Length: 75
Length: 231
Length: 161
View (cartoon, chains in turn purple, brown, green):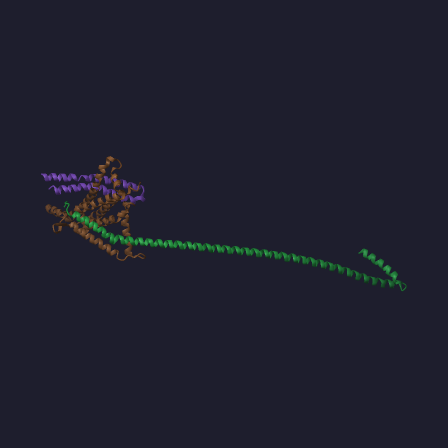
């Protein structure tokens, strides 16, 4: 039984991915809009977008790490 | 079948001890790190064999260009005041870039091991604080915790610990995740598919994470050393 | 796999060693070469600057010399023209004077000739008239009364003229 709970706990921990997904999607949409408005700035915008995406992804990754920790350590 | 799958996966994920020196267990990540160090130093010695000032050969021009652009990437975060740390940041960038993508060559990336990432982030935070103290002097650095309001001092102090944790967790989690997915794909479908995934996970993600780690550290260093010059 | 053990220290040591090795083998040489090249380029640039300045100066001097030479030439030409004009005028005036004098002399000579020819004519006419009168009047005419007749006649002729 406890292993099921562990499984549930791990699955819920990965829900942090939602925040990352929504945030990065919004950032990408704004980036695309601004490139459409000013095509010359697209190099800088791409760089900033990638940077922001990687930073925002970190929170999703934390969830993943916690899930792995739960599964592996709380056996 | 599922058990074998999970067993194999787990085996891949753990860091095995390669050999023991006395009763110190040297794990895989250290060995791979040694290999990476050897590769880097060898390449460095090879390309700087005879440098000419006047009429450089094409190889030398490429090398110079690469080094200059490498330092340029790092300098943009460090700003003017952090320039003395360029060499260390560039070294870490090269090491991480190589370490994260070594999965392509069949070895386990050392950053999959928590020790490596925590070690790197401890060094980063020490460097940041050391840079701050060196640039601003001990008293001002201590007073810097009170900015902007004295109430936020605990949060500022807490930030000293949070920054490296977030750095190392980000790096570790990304590389671990990439490695896990790659291994799963390899176990299930060892044919053409790993190449496509490998292109994204290993190369792109690995390089991106390495760059982000170095960039954030250099940003913090620049921030720590620069607040002095603004006055 | 998520344990922290002695490898932490190993990693830190490894990275530090790597940093020093890289600094010695990669960054110092490459940056050194780049800096040296930069220096040489700067040196060559400043040398070129100096040479350019020198060339500009020499150029200026040449231009100034050419300028002064031109001015001198113009002055000489102007002077020559002036002199030429003066000479011409002098010659002209001399010639004019000469011509005027000659004309005067010629006129005088003509007047003289006229007088001389007139007197010759007078003499001839006198002789002619005397011969004719002698022939007309015969042998009884004395020389003095002929002369008085003749002088009257010439005076009339002269008045008419």
